[in-house]
Image 1: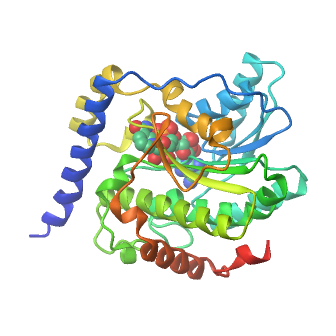
Image 2: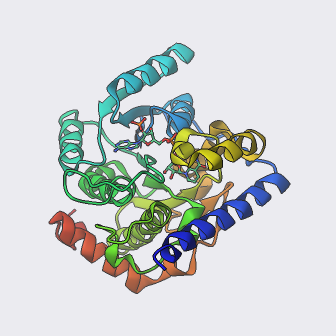
Image 3: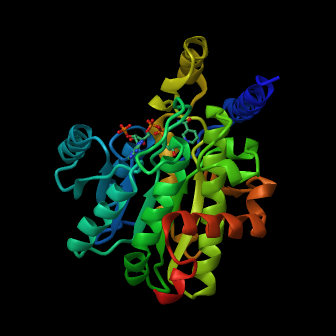
Length: 330
Ligand SMILES: NC(=O)c1ccc[n+]([C@@H]2O[C@H](COP(=O)([O-])OP(=O)(O)OC[C@H]3O[C@@H](n4cnc5c(N)ncnc54)[C@H](OP(=O)(O)O)[C@@H]3O)[C@@H](O)[C@H]2O)c1
């Protein structure tokens, strides 16, 4: 009987994956319109050293933005910076160490960023782990929950002050969280999330992604009701040919590789919606939405549950020792 709770999340995730693949088979990848230059603007991209995050960083530097690649791998981060500077000598890009699995690392990252006295116009919460074996962070949290959700929650909350100061009513700062169709399959009972007593890596990933969407919507609502010049939106990149799938079992990985070559979006194609969310004039003031292939789509029914959003927000603040209403003091 113990196997049933394990199989359910796997099947649900594979079915959603099939649906996304079918869509990608039948539709061309979204291509972004020409976006206005972003000179003088600063963005942080978590997990920007490789995969989708690297492409987002690349396209944003192409628009003239100063991009800070926040990565836990210094060698990889510096190599990414070098490649971007080689490609475009005027690229303003640098690396800062950030391990989202450590709340202390998140706090230290924010302190170093504040010491630089830079503005911040866009925060792209992109980094993630998927299907990692059961494990806990140094703070005692389940890994998917910690990296994909909790670390980004803390990062965002600690950077809100500078995001608010950098935004104006004509050009709001933008928080863009890279979510996933996996959230459609998540169990809405998020109580067990921080520890995951009955561990399923598939459920853990899906729940962490639902938590990200719930957080994004609630945050946007709070920002709007406080009149702050910041928006928050969720971006679903579709299925992308990156190393995110490296923890699949060997048979699943052997099947996934050729399919990925044929049907997955390239990181460059998939980055377009995230870059649109950061820089499109049409999306000025737009937030609290779920963007997929360049347009707003419905996220899961559960993600719109205001009570669930508020409960998760309260519980997360309590886990992190943050005041629930910090936004009022910004
Ligand atoms: N690929 C897809 O099909 C797909 C589908 C839906 C959603 N997404 C979402 O797209 C985003 C990007 O994923 P991807 O496909 O580009 O995967 P990826 O190639 O595996 O990249 C993940 C990034 O996250 C970073 N990261 C992992 N743990 C971290 C930590 N503790 N601290 C800081 N950074 C950490 C990784 O850095 P290291 O190099 O140090 O590990 C890497 O840069 C994720 O949010 C993912 O959930 C992807």
